Image (spheres, rainbow, N blue to C red):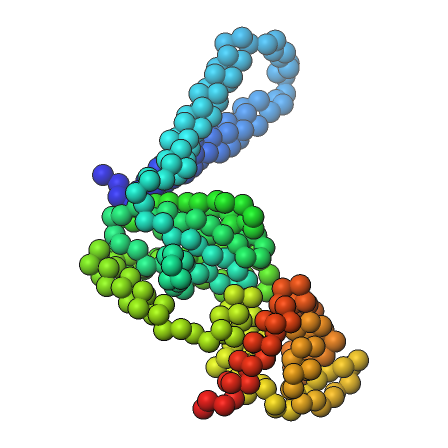
Length: 308
Ligand SMILES: [Cu+2]
């Protein structure tokens, strides 16, 4: 018997195969019939043209056959689709968070992971949440895909059949680094999962600096790193107090990265862009980051320089 990577993949594959076979038979059949007609009924010398009236038999046939085929396609599609909307109530529930441009999996109680680690042969329900714009979560091997829309509670579920690592993609174009919005579903034994889960729990108690939490939750780390890696925007490493070369009105200007500079960079990012980076990629965070939060972030950036 067919055994796909998830409990849902068999139904999807069969619906696809069924539609494909019918489409294939029709394209070959219609093309062959067309070629035959062109040759057989072409104008020949001495042969008068014949006129045909309607044929009830033919009309019934070409109405009934496509109707049956389309209803069968609908049936197999429905049989595959209906279970996708009925998640078992005892499924492991994880919130999948989408933001520009990363996935995060929230196991509750502050336990978050960049990869979806799940036990094999157990139902998993992903509640889909977007923190900014429309995304779409796609796990090709499991044949599951759902849109992740801000303000709308969507979900998907599946039971992974085998251990292994499977790709997770975003399939709704969401901006510059859309193609890099990737993660993995790692399917492991129950015992291995329990161990991983316990580790995750322990990590929650190691408190991260408040400034870092803010940078992450506001989405800053999608474009800026704290380890010196250059992404869409400059890294935060060594930023505070350094001399920056900026492009202001097409002219190079040198400026020290102090409190006022960082405030301006966050609230009015396009007015001064660091040389070598592009204008228009960052919106103003005036409505997103309050002044109190800004203070915490500035203190954190300052602290990045203190520890070596
Ligand atoms: Cu996306």
